[in-house]
Image 1 (cartoon, rainbow, N blue to C red):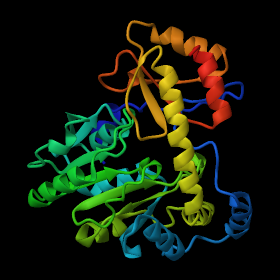
Image 2: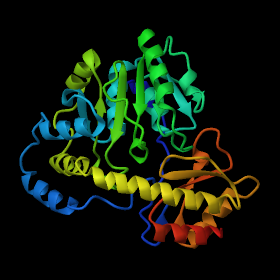
Image 3: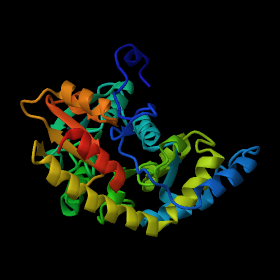
Length: 335
């Protein structure tokens, strides 16, 4: 880490609220979790008097089956962001540049800057066409947060080919890919996939995720990762969740149905971006975003102020939750 950057880099704004009096549409996490999680958690808590097994064999196996790769390619991390910190720590140094999409997840830029690197902003809908030459890495978010578009698989593959030719690492953030039927890029040479296990399984406080990498980069990541970096509780709960593929399918179907219902209603008042993710980005146009956010909160709904994303001046973002909560959202917004 570049210690001089610590005085220059700020924290990134995120959604999420602890206010028990509102329904939280500001964070994009599933309001439901797979059955059996509580029992697994309790059993794991009893085993937490011992250090976790640092090999993480069961977790790696479950993660590999989930995304379709070799278990040895899986690098356990305490969430996708921790995985990105690990990756950039061995890829990026002073003077290195990383191509990042905008608007997108703000932690990409922050993590690059903390390593002394320079994030080079590329429009989110042009990132697949970026020239990877002279970049240490290129980052793609799929589906992109906060816009929700899903980059086509073939476009990602072509970018991966160009990155290999340029000896540039391609980081693909698949935090929300579970909400689509598109296959992961896990196991592709020269590609590092970052996965969060807390979005689709509704357990952001567990802090669990993993990277997938191959070859020498995989070996370097496994050497550099923190020993016992994934807790016993997070390991056991995540392994259980990764095996609940039917739950993921049901979640995907519910979100697709509810997302379309919400989009149709919101479009009677605002412009809404097409989305394949569990959220919708809204352009409020001439309306006052502060007033929309304040009125919604007074009516029991917390929305995400999307103006914290670069280039979004009149936008807000809403998650897609269960049908009952979504009814509350639509009533609060008067659509």
